[in-house]
Length: 169
Image 1 (cartoon, helix red, strand yellow):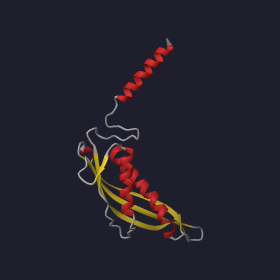
Image 2: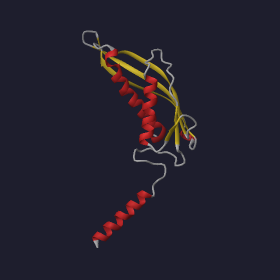
Image 3: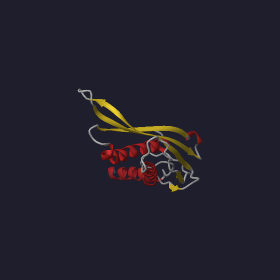
Image 4: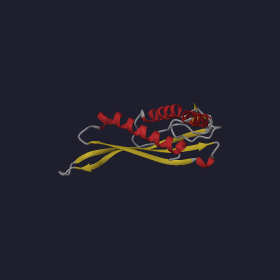
């Protein structure tokens, strides 16, 4: 008798989950069920210091994130969801001083401005700036650590955009 109830409950759970094909995914994304596409535009770089690979890296990582973590098809324009933006800051500054009054660490900061549009839920639209940074040892030349720092920062910026646009965190 206990086996019967176990199997009956298990079957109900499986059938309930199978029926939940709405606008949710196991990544926590909440996307309107009628949304099928997302368009992501390349971010022009308006920072006073330009990293020539930054715009392309940001664009590619955003496309990869949305295509791998949602069921949306990435299109070049007119998506049901649309992301555009610009790079507004790319700078490095001293972030801490040692006991001998020398710079101990520098901070690389990247700031982007993002516009998001949701054709089916206009209340989810936003214009928002995101900024992330990484500190590095001041004895190192930025060019020696820049690629790794930029990769980490871009990953975090893409996660911020993803979360604000489709996870609503």
